[in-house]
Each structure stands twice: as C-alpha cells, then as structure tokens.
Length: 254
Image (cartoon, rainbow, N blue to C red; front, side, top):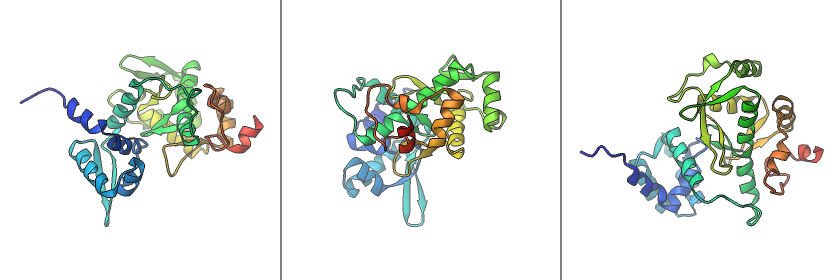
C-alpha cells in the first residue's frame, strides 16, 4: 500500500485542456449542468460526459440530481484553491502586449474564487484591510483579525462570533492567479463577499465568475476603505470599458 499522495492522478485529470476549462468554470462554487460545461470547454455533450465521469471518479467533482437533471460542482474549496494556485505558476500575463477581451477584463478586475472575492478588486480590498490594521498576516498563510477589524466588521453588520473557523482559522491568504498577490479567503472571506453583495456594493454575474461594482459600492469602497474602483481597474494599464466591471454612470463620474 502506497502512502504517497495521488498528485500524479489529480494532475493528469486537470492537465487535459477540456477538463481544465470545465473545472475553471466551476471555481465560483456554483453547480452547472453538463451542457453548460460542454459549451465552456468547446466540446460535444458526449465528450463532456466522458470527461465528467473521470473527474467524478478522481474526486475533483461532485454531482447533484434534481429530477432528470444532473448538476456538477467542485468537490470542495480545496479543489478551487488547487486550481487557482496552479494558474499562478505560469508566466505572468502582460496585457499591454496582448489586450484583454471585455470578458477577461471583467474577470481580472473582480471575480469569485469559489466563495470569496478575487481579482484586482479582491487584492485591493485585502490590502486596504491590512493597511488599516483590520487584518495582519500570520504564519501558515493566515490572517488574524485585529480588534479594530472586528469593530469595523461589526459596524458593517458582520459578527465574527457567528463564523465557524476553518482548518486554517477564520481568515486565509489565497494567492490570486492574475495579480500574483494574496486576497482574503476562508470563512471570513466568504462571509465578507456575501455581505458586500447583500449590502448592494457588489453583484455576482449570473453567467460567469465575474463580480460587478455598483454605484453604491464604488462610493462605499471609497468612503470605507479608500478604494477608487475605477483606478483599481486601470492599475495595470488596461483601458476599461463601460461593461468591464464598473457601472457606467460611476465610470463617467470619475
């Protein structure tokens, strides 16, 4: 009996371009039918069925049945973390030499990384929380919440006592694959994203991992955390479009 981790088998499953595309489309934590996953990968339904069977057997996916329909999702946040970490290993993107499409701009600006906020905005929010002394980096890629942070979160309507710590505590550092810097993950990261959406600051896309900033959110991010959402989008020289993640009226106001 081998006690070695099954790295090779998991890597083999992820290495196929079609399977990688299907897995990546599920990193926002939602469940999707085989037809959507086939479309995301650019393959036929029959080919997608074969790939999905392998991903299920390999422990990367789970499936839920609703009547005659089957919906697939990642087997857990650990799979999402592995995918985002692998994506960060490749060469750094240089968008000035290869302009990003509107869809790519939206995802790079703000997106869901399983259950928390990622992308340029996710990194900016995390860095603002650290600068204000609300979070502090700790060992084992954790963040510790400082008393000032607990007070700010309580004022925002988030009670830390109601959050169950994970294996790495309440807040974890997650390496952002596009920005190559850490954003906030873990139970606190998930709850904060929910709170920002519930408060009307952010809106999740219904068709992708993209997250949009509302006019209310742009104003609140500036007031509460000193974040200029339009400037964050332009940080690496991309020319933002009105539909690339910021509401059009807010972009004009800037």
